[in-house]
Image (cartoon, rainbow, N blue to C red; front, top):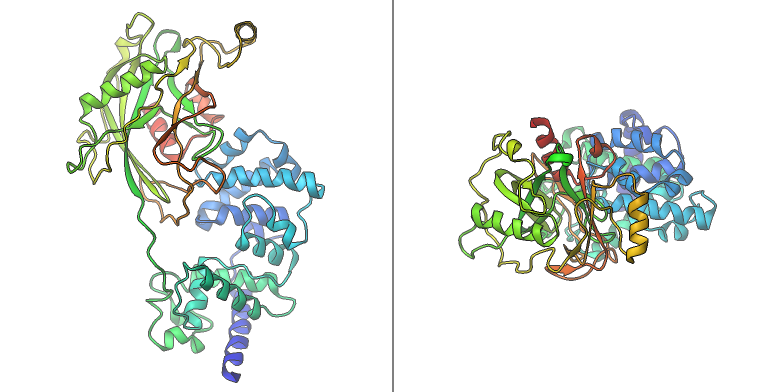
Length: 481
């Protein structure tokens, strides 16, 4: 018992001494503004520090106060977050900012229960805000902290289990020196990020190596114990890059996702699930794939003529891995004539045309857009009676650039938890929608909300928020045309 107490005192003392000497100069550490700390902690979830820093500066510059964030258009917040991934974090952060304005007069409350009641704030974030911003002795236990504690105290419990997390929180709270909660919790996170890393921990420069039970037992490489998460299931999707012609020359067709669910209210290229032949490990051949896309576009009131396979891309969520096959289409007029025949083959096919590989799930079945009621391509989005629609049409200054669809089919992802791995190359990461943010239903669902379509130029992308994978596809396209 005495040895255990001495080990804890040693750990806390040596860790704080090391932190004072070695801590990084990070922008959110230069002050104790609870709002800035809150924003940084949300951004740092599943995201590297080096990636977060420029986003943090840009976000705080645009939304310097909670009031500014609460009052901003949601699309502007998403645009500022674009490229950072896990977009539900941005939506939840703004929703929570509005709660702070409504309930606490625009100031982050110095009360754990009130902080924990904010949208998107879990035990870790609440502990981080309370300890770092207010120096309250609250534990802030994330993956880095659980790894450090598992190794130092030789804890062989699975860190994916709720009981183990509770054990870690109790232990971390016990280790906090009086009056040093802010520095201690940041020191613990810093040690896990810089020294006690997941692979090849740098034990020889660790400030607590002398009494690390895991190192002394030769167990540092196998700890922490962590049950493997279920790998993301593969999905094969067909993407239409529809090029406008005539008055819409130089524009491509995009759509906005529904207000709730995965990637809510973000813009994307139209895409549908690809039927797959079980056992063949690939999606539809290109010919039938383009025919299926053309039928879906026509059903949505967006007739387009198939052109060619253009590229492949990937997008990884915590529970789904999208394999995207992108096809170029030429928009057609009402008579079925392609509006940009002369430009159809200006850009060479890149990114490979060998099809998609990997094990495909069973056929998805229902195609999006089925039974959709769509306004003509030269109308503005509106759902209502004819007289009101006419008034909106007359008042709209952007007629011809929008099209509205009702009863569109969108993917409603199940609310699943999971930890995403680091992204590389074309593979991007995105978290599952949080509980209550989507429809718990597998497959596809006919959405009640209208789905907005829009013809955009490269310049329009500066004000619209896209998931990373569609952002890269569009940037690549506009760079080549």
